[in-house]
Image (cartoon, rainbow, N blue to C red; front, side, top):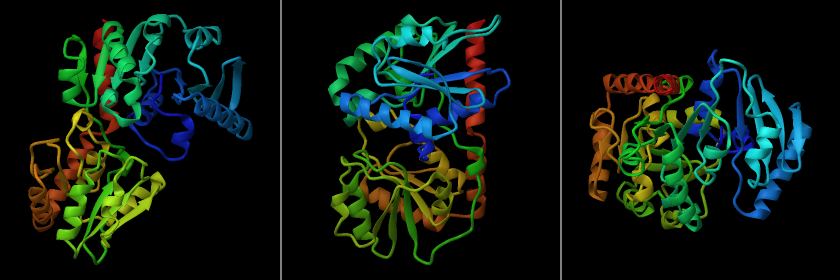
Length: 371
């Protein structure tokens, strides 16, 4: 599995689609082993720094080193999961084969599963029975990858040509990026079953909340408008703030709070303090290709959700707003219309969209293609 994250990031509490799907796969009896190739930074200085840091961490922990070569280290982190960390993608496929990472037993199915569109060699150079690509957002539209638009465009074409099955996080990606691939399936994000629980804790002051990485996709002009028009309410943003975020736009608003990074096991507490959860994203090529995980996490907590994206049509699950005024009015309606029945409906919807069910669907699709 070619990852969009490093194992170190997951150890620090970062959670994404890649993390949840890999861990659901590890729970399945028919999966003997997963070998994860860690996400690699793109700049050489960061590549070497990340590799040296991870190498040092491996020796500090109880992880068992299985093999080493000139380009990386293959180590075991837990039952059924091995991780390969490297500082160089050049010759990667050859190194993985020499390390035995592509070996299989008789009657086993060898799946190449990728989340990393910046590396497409694996689709043609590694032995496999099935190739799966899981498209999480359109990386061509992400500010961090502007320098690599041509590489991504070429790689997306190679991925479409060589993959047996493509999953997309959003319907937009299915219809626009991989529209001509016969085995493209839209599999939305999901929610961790363990997080489905409505805690009754509430603060005295009405709290409008956001959970997730705070970056340029957040419309802080909208947030500023809301904060100024609802001075009796507090707006809490839970998560790390990236440099490209325009958070300075709300610096003069005394009712906007940034918590900074929060351990994943504390998110449930913060969600329990929200009265309404929001997704105030700009509408552009990047956000249109997304299916925010936070939407399902909000519903799992029984919260009313207001968003600039029409993620579902049911108003019990989502208040959709196309303008600043509509967003403000939707928050008021979400507060006044919230009931226990609606909260239970949201939680039931979250249960029907667990990561376990998502992976069951994926495995079923792969099984049909294999036939």
